[in-house]
Length: 303
Image (cartoon, rainbow, N blue to C red):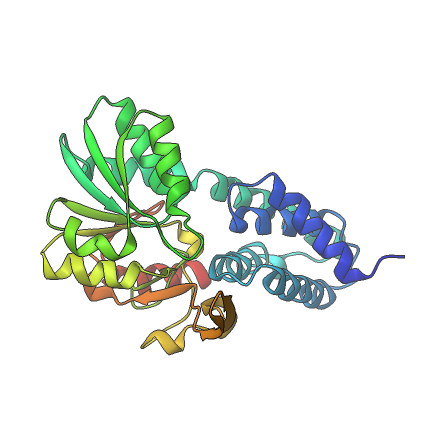
């Protein structure tokens, strides 16, 4: 007989294989748990779901997994006290869960709607790493017939920028793959910087792929607008003051990497924090927001 954790890992991995992002996989997996739940009381149900969420967060220690889990749990249980029986409550929870899942699935198209007007004819855009929502925005702009050029950072250590570059190239969008260290050279040539986000924190700053912060510093120094495209389910109740405030499992850990010359210690953070004063606007499925508006949106999402 398989262990409960093994079953949860199997459920998560199954949904991850058919999902475009870890957040969507988490949402689908939570719905699978909800569909088969047989808890006798509301308290038992919440305790069970919280343990499931902890397991998913350990499988995929990403801020978007943490944020969507918290918002999902809050959203589906918002009206739980209105029902007299556990069966009525379970039915209502499933309905609200499906409603939440539909919202998550439709997030990208709403962001594209708000973000695409900022890309004008002849734009030169610098992007970092691979972001599905940024890619979808570019594809939509391409369909409108606008001409634009994208510079994509290679995005070490996993070189995820190559994924973005290959997808843009496959769709006939003019693009160039550049070294991360070359952003200071190319920032002079671009009109704007556009990035996705792993998470949006309380003060309007973002946590994203390592290298986003120095890119934001460069953009600020050259007076280039920095636009962030992010789903509202990535908004999280966290208030980092510096890089060290990013939770360790999300930030990444120190790694020992073997080189030809021997084994050396290398610090390997996977994400960094970009403060709100470096961000021009956030394009979200709830609309285009200033960084100052994020705290109000968080209140609406979590209360």
